[in-house]
Length: 311
Image (cartoon, rainbow, N blue to C red; front, side, top):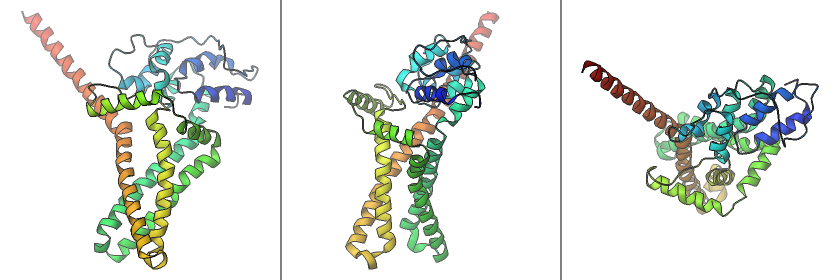
């Protein structure tokens, strides 16, 4: 990181903030980031770090993995950018996998969204704890031993603090990306309706028609950006009312807070399960099925080859 100048990090940051695979541009400028160079714009980039066509960036890209086999008929970084385009999820695995991108640039990329990722994992861990302890308290609370109920309640409140801290951490330590996410969440256009229609057809047909494009700033993600802080506020208010109890806030207010809290929890549980399925479950299942199909295809070809030799 020491041989990257401050003006150059602004250029790298602007490239990384775009929803497009950055590996080709980073490969090109990797030779131009020494201490004795300056680079103040990302327009008309040129350089000598040629693509080796090794396919490392292609193999690392989760978007390519979700596409039909044969999509990348040429395994180069430039075709990766053209084929993935705005479906890029900004994971930057392509940059990390490229042998032509210099080490200082890779280190900068790894740190680019670190606070955002920490906030994301804090949010996920806190909510999973809240979900499990909330189910334990609300469904089996009256049958739990008093000490176990006290522990579950304490853990639930601590997790609430961690949940509220996630967006605050993001805002305080990476305000640029926080505000960028907020702007993206509030920016909607006509083509978003087409995305929603295609996604709905993909879901209802179990993937047989339509498409689910999961780029970094797709409408689904923007909806999630809007939903999460709203849900946190709802949980914080209703949870506080429930914590104060009916003796303080009144029975009717307490009952209303409980109903809203539970409905918000159910809604978030469903969305969280869907989120985890799309991020983790479906890719694992897809890759497993693809590997199994390739294995059986190979076995079939080998059997046909042996049978042909025998004849």
